[in-house]
Length: 255
Image 1: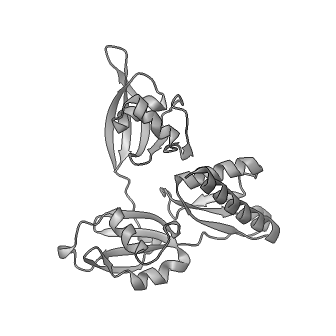
Image 2: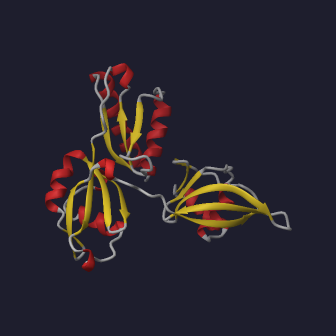
Image 3: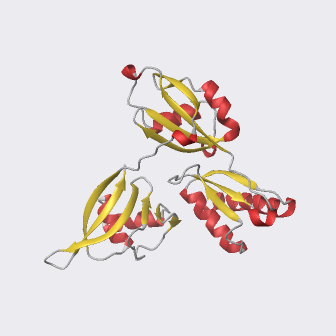
């Protein structure tokens, strides 16, 4: 996101925040990706809002895309759920189904005229796809999403109690000289240190959901590293040392 988009988004957050304050009500954003959440974090710090005034939710505990809710339940005196619905889409005939990807489902939804920021995560579990969307779009999508690529679909609202999301990882061993983010990122992306630094300059590197522009930033066990275009990783720390004194570390890549 360039600076002009950041300014526009910051003004949008200000409208939501002060509408909540002045009208004593909860106000919600649409779904935010990591860059938008970084702008939100900067806005909260700049305005000095209490940490309980803004909360994030994507519909389930491991969500990547999230909505922001402005309003403190204790101050307002009531609780209000995030307006999120979950849709379950699966092939009508599994025997003739294509191998559908996240991009396929997203493309089919956007072909219905739906904006990207009204769609949260899309999680594919076997032949099923769970799609988190703004609640007011649920019925429209259920009535309109008949096909993804060439596969005819059965679509309905998912029962949240029946949703089982299994996190899957590929374990990687990295040999690094130090626990600096640029060193780790270079190995994860198979880029030279200089090429990896370009990702920082382009605002594509996040540590625990926050943007990082310094490659010298230290990484600790349990930190979540995201490099847009390359994936999301959990850093599990040092496993052992090589004879030459380098560190052998374990990183899990989300798959």
